[in-house]
Amino acid sequence: MVQIAVVGIGFMGRAHLRNYSMFPHAQVTALCDVRAEAMDPNCPETAGNIAAGGVQFDFASARHFTDFEKMLDAGGFDMVDICLPTYLHAEHAVKALEAGYHVFCEKPLAMTNAETRWIIETKHKCGRHIGVGHCLRYWPAYREVKKIIDGGKYGRVFYAEFARFSLPPIWGWDGWLMDSKRSGSAALDLHIHDVDQVFHLFGMPQAVRSRGVREKDGGFSHITTLYKYPQFDVMSTGGWNCSPSFGFVMRAFFILEGATIELDFSKSPALTVFPKEGEKFSPALPPHDGYFYELKDFTEHLETGNFENIVTAESAAQSIRLGLLEIESAHQDAEIGV
Ligand SMILES: NC(=O)c1ccc[n+]([C@@H]2O[C@H](COP(=O)([O-])OP(=O)(O)OC[C@H]3O[C@@H](n4cnc5c(N)ncnc54)[C@H](O)[C@@H]3O)[C@@H](O)[C@H]2O)c1
Image (cartoon, rainbow, N blue to C red; front, side, top):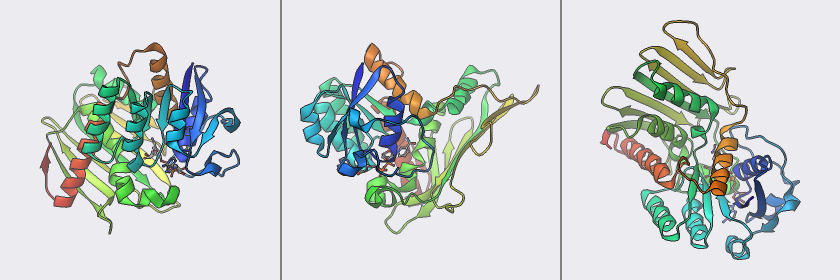
């Protein structure tokens, strides 16, 4: 049985708690939030741009803390799951590692390359493991696309594009999401999902060329990037300037030699493959979302001690490096070599 402490009981913290409730091999023994009321079962649900469902969590089954260091001292768990605002990830991950715990950290792992280096060095020093919540690597439809591309049946990739459009996330605790110093704005917070998919599917590009909608605080509330690879180009666009009545959508589109693949979560089914020869089809997919599979995977790895396929801090750090280069390209309005 893996025992877990969850810190940050907002939108994502609650989504993680609901998923842990479905795992027979995991037990949440501690909760931490600066707002005691966040750990009250009657606390109204925090909003978010994507449905993150699951069964209800029994808040009375875990100890409650409003002080992170007191929770670390009290112990009674194997891992700390960090669902805090992004600017707090590095400091809390390092403290948890130094206290001897494994860490699961929501995306993006940190705000800067210096912070990701600090986390990785501490991880090595302390001999603990970190998994990062890049949920799209576990989202069944995205996973299926990777399987199809890597399988090679439809030949090489000619072109790929990713899109992620949201209403402004005014719901975050203390307005942190709308403050680019604390969230990295949409370019780091929202768009990192697609940056990570670009890196996960195709590796690092040779160069990036980005433009975006720059806010008064210097953050980009929308960013569009061209990723240059030797044989093909990838495009990605994302931001949170959409009308509230539009809500949220994620999409991706791939042109291969032998097939076109469309992923569009405003459609049902979301994934359709259009082969050049034969009928279009929608592959059958596993029933849960990426949050379920990423947390199941990390906690099962903790039980078995085999960490081969988790989303490592090193790999998440590469996505941050790429995302930050895109932001730099948008600031300079120039292409940047990777
Ligand atoms: N994987 C995804 O699809 C996804 C979706 C949404 C958010 N996220 C990520 O999850 C993280 C949290 O985002 P959220 O939307 O849940 O934010 P949120 O604002 O809903 O929740 C943050 C919580 O942290 C608490 N908190 C703040 N400072 C604290 C401290 N020092 N100690 C303890 N608790 C503290 C707040 O009271 C709040 O309950 C972010 O990194 C975000 O980027 C990921």
